[in-house]
Length: 425
Ligand code: TTP
Ligand code: MG
Ligand code: MG
Image (cartoon, rainbow, N blue to C red; front, side, top):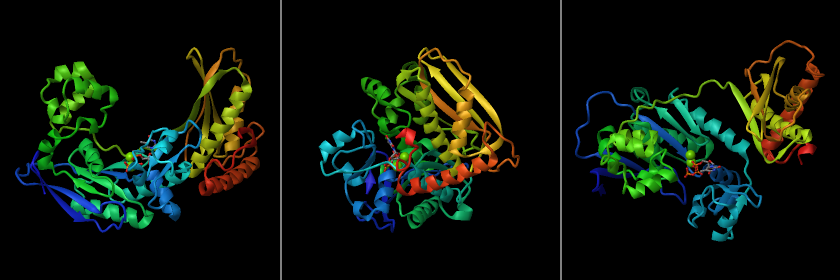
């Protein structure tokens, strides 16, 4: 089959990934007109999991397989986090209010969010990807860019690398993904989404310049609702239409985005793959529904954040030696307080106690609108010193760490809402 608009040939191949509901296709773009350009080109892969949260739920509960399901908060104001491809047939999508989704299909199955489970699977995916190249840039919980330039000698053609990645993810995690392969990042991202689910879409370098001109402007990363409205007025439907405007006009109309689109339309994207650096800090904060002066509310929030941060530290086998708290007021001023600990900790209880210690002498006379805790000085090693800290001995901390780890195991198995401190119920 040939696409008349850009002279690209489509090859449909069987991917050998049995999936009863999804097309089992590999889509490969091959040039039929241009000669390959000289010079070393980049080969970028963008891997994005298919219906990530719902696919995990369907994998783990056979009763959900093949059914229209969503993952989302169960409250009245809850929104759809993820919709299975079966649910999407009824026009149900991420970010839609759940009540609206239920109107579209009353038989819809709503599964509560289990973030720990999804984050755990995400880590396993990233681990697989890092076995192909160290140049892996995770961009969200279910997607990552890989720079596989020069890996072909060792690992085979880029097509074979993409097939292999899909096979491994399927074999080890029982999940499908879609992969885009292109000479630049933004095109790889567009390609991975083009034939979802369960597909590989390859845009060869020598075809990319022509292909770019046909890309729907709404699909270009960074183009949001506001820009789309303006594009409509200017009759810009594709990236090719961008070429009708000078850089000066595009910058005037869209600012930095205009500059980016000007380059994209010529297939220029100099952004590199940025492998994730060492994590320096983790923070958790909440903007309150109602501003408060009540210290009890502050304490309750600290307890909540300490639980979240402790769990995150323990999940990654991290210890912290630095705790800081932040309070933002209704006049948008803020205060922060921090303490360097002599003992490294990962227990939620210890984080909570330290955060209380930090506000002990504070005099608050303004309404608080945001409350947060942050932990830094992260390491995988525990400091061996044993010194008392705010009534917390090493023994006490170790005991709490054990309890926390047990709670983490239960949360992982049954969902993070199953066990909560009594004060947070
Ligand atoms: P996406 O990759 O955008 O979507 P998806 O994996 O569910 O489906 P697709 O096959 O189209 O890629 O997001 C990954 C996960 O992130 C998704 O499963 C749930 C979560 N998510 C939200 O929680 N809220 C949102 O608004 C979106 C878009 C995603
Ligand atoms: Mg996805
Ligand atoms: Mg994604």
